[in-house]
Image (cartoon, rainbow, N blue to C red; front, side, top):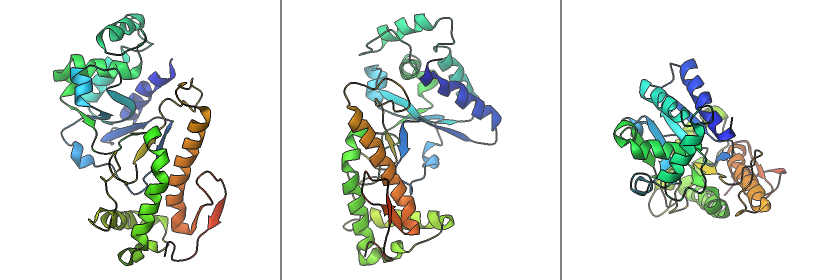
Length: 281
């Protein structure tokens, strides 16, 4: 099976194995969670069964094969979703009509460079051609970095970290500098989010980050780098992908280590150094 299609049976199996779970969240192996304080706003999705990062115009009007990114998605555990999984998988390599679907998506979707039915193109096709069946219960999320493009994120992470440090360094943020146990993380996350939202003394941007502002990106997705063994997009150098992944992992790791009084010695360093009490006072 082509690797990116493996998510369909995996997600479907999780849905059936855990009927008590309302949602199943798929995150590709080349994506990094880079905001440890952010929680998925599930109440925002009460009227939807599928949440994926994408753009309405590109999917429904232009039918662009890159109108969404299927590497990170949230799917409700319900019959609608099981039906979608079946329709989606029917366009994959396990189907006897796989080659036909490849020709179909190339003909129907704008910009599709080849006659291969990949998972992303297949989902765009399903939404664009049957919006009344699949599109009405799908939310194309762009309100925050539900998954953010790594090339526009990693070069800004140092600036993001400095702005969060500035909030904690301010007199009003002194309570955020206390070390704390992991069990207290949610309480500290709520206090930090409240502090960075403040106008005039916080950090500009939406919760979960976005193309505007300096909030932490929720998910940094290294699409095109294929660090798990795939063929890297020649548009990116091996060094930029490798350093980008290390930078994102260290950025996320530092958020966890801070509670215990440590951090990485430098953005691309594997060494960990102790921090003084009261950092960043």
